[in-house]
Image 1 (cartoon, helix red, strand yellow):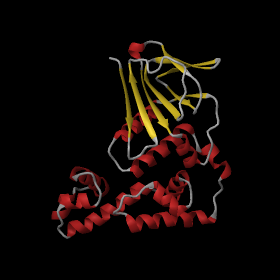
Image 2: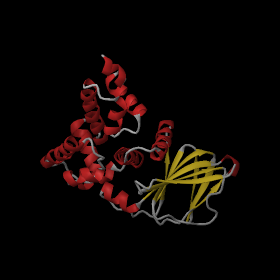
Image 3: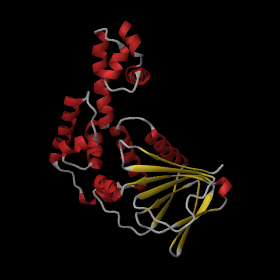
Image 4: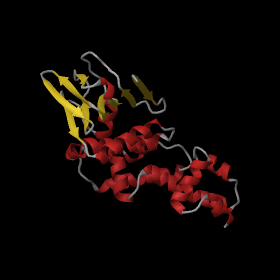
Length: 264
């Protein structure tokens, strides 16, 4: 089977996913405008970049910086499978307060848990979930894979105003938890980058902005259930995708389904 497919999310146009199974995705030297992160799922390949060549297999990730000319040659097309995540250069630079200037290719060996984590990320990015959940997970996993923190924080020192800034972001969630909230909304109140907003929110409040908003919604749902409101209406009014999603989330937080809580 020769299958090459692309996935994009029109609601979050900062990434693109390319999946290749038993096929040649490009037979010519080429480059990308985006930061490209490839996860090898099966087989092996040689990646050529100028006079350098890199051997990659199912234990490695390949990080290709924007504009770097390269070519991939699979050892066996029939047993070659990978997924590539393309991230917009200006988004990466804005999120992590850095510049992508490297002219190299980075090959990073991965543990099994790292590979599963990245494959799970690709699956999450394909889901119909909120932008804040999707973008937050993307930032967290890219930070994990590339160890962005090691050089992002060189020009960042903790200040006493940081907690005040993050409190402003949290207050925005408190006041608007029934609305669709994005990371862009939060950064306008924190006056920090998306990366530092997520990092400091987790540091000070031990949760992510999306999880905090979900908790506020579910606590509010308990009040509505006590008032004998219809469960399907609650799910819709609180921004869950359907009643099943609402019930699953409610049980994860409170140990019982909304129906059982309602009739108690």
